Image 1 (cartoon, rainbow, N blue to C red):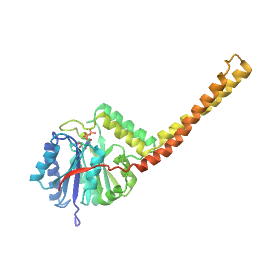
Image 2: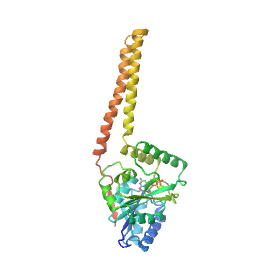
Image 3: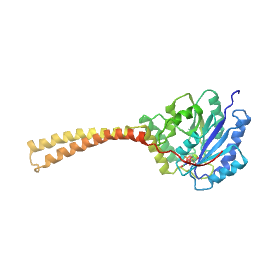
Image 4: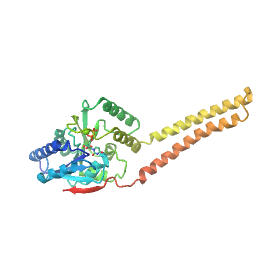
Length: 315
Ligand code: UDP
Ligand code: MG
């Protein structure tokens, strides 16, 4: 190959002291193999992003850097979450291509070679897609499968069973830079940017050490983020409830008037209280829904806080 490119593997790490002594040597081995096979240049590297770990993660990264110059690091000032840590890494690279991969070796690193070949074949973004979820728990599998269904019903363009294991060229990353949103859901954003893409299938492996750093709270937050950052359908749903209640209140109003004038026996004042109550309830929900849509648009625009803060760097 004539024009070799430099690669940075971006690895977000949160409390990964159990995993890193296993995964760093493995990542180094893979990088060396790619260099030896003349797929990438010698100045390729691995960037570990310490997402505010409370354990020895950063020390381990520093130690490996002493003996392996390919190992570099970025330390965030606190835990910003996987998506932001990943973005911090991706935005700081200076090589031609990046590959984002989890620290726990669940994303099969041997797929990286195929990803790079796909890049040389013209793809600007290469998605790693799991075609086997047997290593996930039943609950996680159930949740993930239904989540992709709901998202597609809500009109969000997601690549099913693709998480954040992907290759992105500098060109694609520069476009990503222009997306300023604070509520990050990268796997929803990247299909929006376009370019030539390719999918590579792999079997998701089990975590080799340590526990998942995605507790239920983080998982639900990510899921909600995916919905609210990319779809206004939940707000439109409020409008439909409002319309439904408004119609119902109209029917109730007619019924109340019929009871008053033709059937009789109503308590004095009942009709004049009940009819406006239902009607106003419906109208209120309806207008709240419309206001909600506008607020959600403004909300998405005005949030301009930094998405991550870098404390330290090893180059
Ligand atoms: N991670 C992170 N910040 C967090 C949570 C997770 O950087 O707040 C990293 C974690 O170290 C790992 C990757 O994100 O490299 C995926 O997390 P994990 O493997 O725990 O998630 P799971 O595979 O269970 O979904
Ligand atoms: Mg994992």
